Amino acid sequence: MAIEPVKIYAVWLREIKRFLNSKSRMVGSLAMPLLFLVALGGGFSSFLPAGSVPGGVSYSTYLLPGIVAMTILFTSIFSGVSIIWDREFGFLKEMLAAPTGRENIVFGRTLGGATTAIIQGLMILVIGLVITGAPLPSPLHMAGAFVFMSFLSCFLVAVGIAIASTLQEVETFQLVMNLIVMPLFFLSNALIPIEKMPGILKGVTTLNPITYAVDGLRDLMIGQGTLGLPLDFAVCLVGFIVALAVATYLFSKTAI
Amino acid sequence: MDAIVVDRLEKRFNGFTAVDKISFSVKKGELFGFLGPNGAGKSTTIYMLTTLLSPTSGSAKVNGFDVGTQADDVRKSIGIVFQDPTVDTRLSAYDNLDIHGMLYGMDGPSRKARIREVMELIELSDWQDKMVKTFSGGMRRRLEIARGLMHTPNILFLDEPTLGLDPQTRRHIWSYIEKLKRQGITIMLTTHYLEEADFLCDRVAIVDHGAIKVLDTPKRLKGMIGGNVVRVSSSEPQKLAEVVKRKGFADKPRMDETVVSFDVKDGGKALPKILEAAIGAGIEVESIELRVPSLEDVFIHYTGSSIRSEKGAGDMMMAMRRSRGY
Image (cartoon, rainbow over all chains, first blue to last red; front, side, top):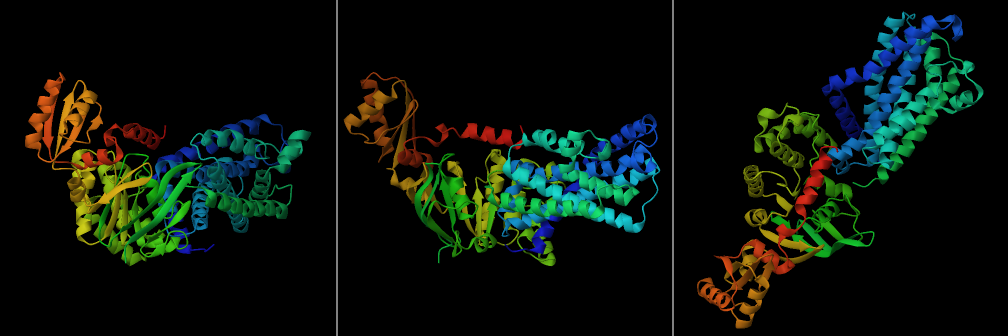
């Protein structure tokens, strides 16, 4: 295994260029989180009795970190899984034939996908702060949230790459959406405080790494974490390392 | 030293032998062709020579490097144009080449200079900042060739370089390949177009069922078959073949649906005799044709079937459907 930064950069650059070349897709991917924020956030803010969410904040404000995490969850996993499209449209061969180890392709791809996901996450964060009128976090807290988002997105892109390396059919997309992305989102604390969940749901939610990412972001953005920042961060970090290792292993095993 | 040396190279997939212990070598500066129907093992051979697939047994040296143990050295020294498109359509032509250059370890200034060179070569300089999705099939193929040449390889592999292109565009691509050949680069191409192999290649290997049936210059291959070929289309080709064979006019008739082809020394003399024999046996002759042998005759001679009767078209349709994302 030889790390070649230039080649990682080449793969990263391709992701960024593709991202910049498809602005309509970016707008499309921001639409859903904003809809959630406006419709769910706005709706439940007036519907739920005061004190339904911890800390006495409005439901919209409470929801915002969850929606930022959701944006990152969706874009990161699909960015990783889109290696399937590269296989379908041929560009994967170009990368596999290049004189570089496959780990560099995985790293470049992970960083590239994460970069685009973080950009979209930050956009939602900024728009969300404006919409919800939540108080602006301090620069230090923002930096912390950024670090969180970085590890979370790298973690999830790697998950996507691992899935794409195992299931190589285009039909996988629907499968990933229904069996992985949606459960990860809905079975987390993104929409509902974990303390208010019934027993079984609470148990499942506690096992979901997204829960810790949301909790960490909530802690840093609006000061309403309940699981503790060190634990939140540890889950994201461990998830990232394990997913990257698995993705690298599985991707290096794939045939052309 | 030869550019490519292949020694008893074999590839099996779950008991199916795709490439059956083939051996050949390609000289430096040569344009070497692999001619055969789809499924003959051409692409599999290319994949092994470009280190994308590991052989079941045997060995191959490309530019003096072993494909098994020195994969990175092989990769740096070769350019590949795959059968299916592999350019990124959501990037500009320039970015496709630039990123390729980075992946092959070229520095910034040399990438810039080389992009100008290769874009000029394929006459797409005016298009370099355009998104590849706006390119026609022929332009994309040219861009693939430019990308294959980007890192100045010693050997260029072209896997079916004109597959699915219209005849005019095909001619165009041929002229680029000829231009490259004049520059001295070694080229190995695969094709199932007989005219392509005949027109471009210094030497041609006819492959079928994973094995090389015969290997020589197109001229010598055609020379191996008598002086002329007489092709007769009739209602009873089988019977005609037997009659002509019995009379001793030609000894190895070849059948292809309703057409029988005979290799004869002197076509002018043989033609009336064959026609006479046919009429004598009461066979209705629809048409009769006299010609010098083409590579197709050679192909039929060595493989026993016409390259056109293979199920190539179906595979291509499948590939097209695939590439459209159905």
